[in-house]
Length: 334
Image (cartoon, rainbow, N blue to C red; front, side, top):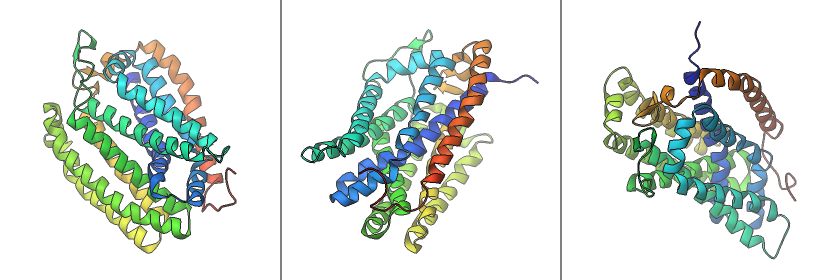
């Protein structure tokens, strides 16, 4: 049996990106929510709720970015020049956020500065991720296997709106995570914010479902013709189902259900992007086979991935299992 190595690697990288979005999304959401919780006690609990896992979540970003360079070098060479600005700003924001996570516990006089750095770093990183996604969805100009667009092509109303939508989505993940991990007044306020963010996220998904087909003719064909058209009619039903589970869980105090249903919304959105893109890795012109490294390189790298990816999954699952349940004031950093 012949293994389609480019397809297999595209699936691995797609999984890594999805894992990063859903895992790092909720702890970015914690930072986005910081301004809504001015009390030090609440902020300490919020940071402690993600302290055991936040750094490990970013492993998937490294895997996705490094894998793209090693496995699809042509795509890396095209996408990076097209998205230099939002990606550099995103990385700087993640650095400020990471430093703030550690430093705010070590000072009293400057704690407010690190609180701002954590909140703004999280928000800017989320916004830039959304901009990068929007710029990729609307298409990247390619000529002679190289980026042919301008320095500011990534900055459009569509990409800015995508950035705002992702911030709202991460807010939902952060709020439902807090509802699952905390008790008392913090839990109540998180549930209130989660309800608002749930409607905002679903509304944003609806807007982009109508807007995206107009950015590229390829998407119209994928969404409304052929077997993939079934997905276009099924997704709205599933999205409304997730929204119902979120609202019902928040109302009835089933704290884990809203978080899982929020992840379901992201999974549905991600599946829609995958159906729109395939088989292109740089829409609308470069396929995964065009961009792939030689099969010998892919096979060599796959041998490492077969070992490393299960290891990452195991220690990630173990970390979440060990630190499961509600968090108290006595847990975490001090």
